[in-house]
Length: 63
Image (cartoon, rainbow, N blue to C red):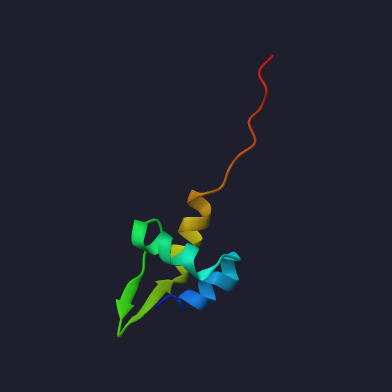
């Protein structure tokens, strides 16, 4: 089964980020994408991986 593919605009809405930020994430390799006919297509599972890779955990204070 093929995961859902998103356009940059869809990723912007999903992550609540601007277009330039999403393009920077793609260019830096932090977010995987395929460029087809001038449009970037991003697999939804890659967006989820990006989110999970950027979670921050609260640090417990040591006594």
